[in-house]
Length: 216
Image (cartoon, helix red, strand yellow):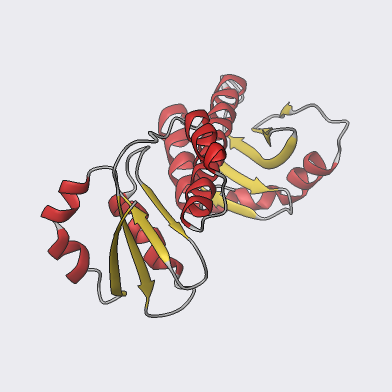
């Protein structure tokens, strides 16, 4: 599932580009994000659309449109647009496509993170390491530095999210938890992080107190 931050940014982008107010609902009936507080008034219509499997995946009414969003074959979101019906179908399809693409990228990223977790925990055979790395387009021969980070407060997700925002901006950088107490940061550009090591270690607002360096 996508984070609320990503969903909020996507909803705002849809409104700015198409001019339609937008809301995204999960399959439990919770409105996750919305660009207009009044959109929660359509909860019953969303619920009927969500629960009726015989309904088409798109429905345009007078001033609202609803679009099911699938991950693989499972519905995960309902995208709702509100406004003049002219152009709503095209705008909704574009918004739905954007959400599907984000779900695909997120799933691919999660698969890579799980691979890195298993690699560091020595849960993979050597042949599996090379095969999976090749499949995921992860360079197998690249030398890396692994930062093992232990937050002061166990389970503090803010540390991991902050690290992701700062250091996992590329497709070859990894920030992921390996257990309940430790997070690893594995950047591609080693020299950048050594050049900025004072910021990395000292300016994390006291969230991090232990960093170990290991070469893999």
